[in-house]
Length: 330
Image (cartoon, rainbow, N blue to C red; front, side, top):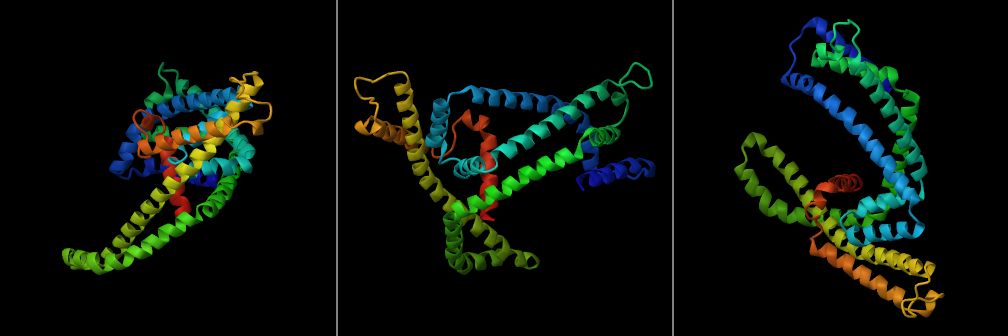
């Protein structure tokens, strides 16, 4: 199990001090940064958890109309930038969101228990010399000490159940996305096969001539990887254009419906344009096309790349999008 592996690792680390074997530069570097890294993690995780809780509480206070408008706005203006990420959210929403939220809550609670115990450990002075014990030990000993603290304070069954729940949902989401983006995957494979012949005919011989004989066997493999990467890039670029238009229309419709209901709930008729029966007016269709055009135009205008400073704020989305694309394509 995960816990037994961790116990074995820390046992080996603690026993190695007796053997006094030489350690590598990487180990030295790990030991030197252990103390500041632990402090950063101890400060960052509670802040992340607190912000997440506040964001979720704020989300719960929003009226349904506002939630629909916000999600419509995201789909309309950013759907082409993160097609697989938004599709993953939708798949999770349909089956698994409650279990994932429960699992994340359990993991957050366990993290806070460990962090609070670590803070108390940082102040411990068992030898009564006026200095905290953690300040009197080496980086390696600190790693072992904190690792043992994690093992003793963590509830392994609770953590195992939470991770298993998230992993099961992730597998279900990936299965849905592979079906949803099967055409894109097939397109990438087709483009790769199309590129193989001219690449092997014109580029491969040239690279073989320029490569030393002992490395020549690697040329076809590396060239094949490069061809597949180019094919994937082309296929996902085309999918990005398609997703931008589709999500723009879908998001525009969500924003239009939310805006129409907002006006109806507040008896705003806008000069007779808002009617009790939406079928008697075309204002909602007009608003939908306006929103959709704005969203699609915005995505094409920025070249499907977030401008500064949005790229600094939303880099986790970029990373998640890249990872999901690689996962469902492979």
